[in-house]
Length: 279
Image (cartoon, rainbow, N blue to C red; front, side, top):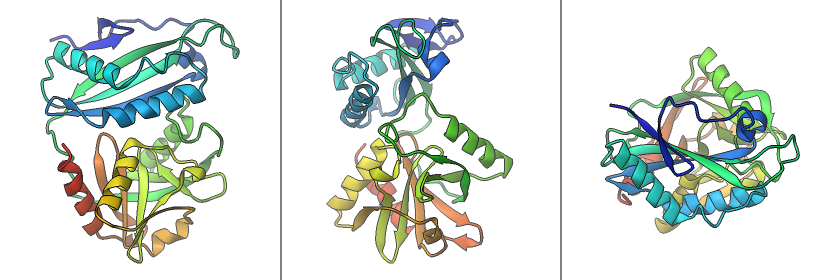
């Protein structure tokens, strides 16, 4: 059975060559992307995804951010899921790029988009049975600037970190910002439990403003758990009780080890349970 993508409101078979050589996302990384999850036929947290897309498009000075709203996300993901006979659970990637010609200076700020989907087996966010083994990646640090909190198409620091992860047979690596403080992992936001307090890097530390990060912070407030956005020294990893990672596709994933340090998963397990109650 052919697999379809949605490219600027038209369906194409996945392997159809559709991007032109002048595509600005290909040439300059001039765009953004958003990962989303559908559970039981319902797109999860569409309003948060729409808000982040709008904020990113504004930051990139592209036009049409009011068109890629919650209604657009629900409608287009539903259409693509049906086209691919995915009736319940799937993961989506929306890529948005600045369309048109030009060198570094674009000739237009209009955008195009590409939407992809892959099926998922279960509707729930499954907490990993085996904890992750992680390390700190310090070969390339993440810069602090106006684009640091957004998921742009310029992802080379994460690619290089992922290559380091693969080379050293790790499950994940943690990135540092330019000042040497913890920022995030290659694909997730970071939370650390230390002395009965939950810490996560503040947005001012350059981490991506993740949708699941937002959800976890809301859940912590709802269940009256102290959660602090902070500047976090990587040395805390040697003293913490728990470390866990979050993203829109996987939900919560707990870390078992960093070097010789081993962690529990009581808090991460609680968050995973509360998260699944939202489905």
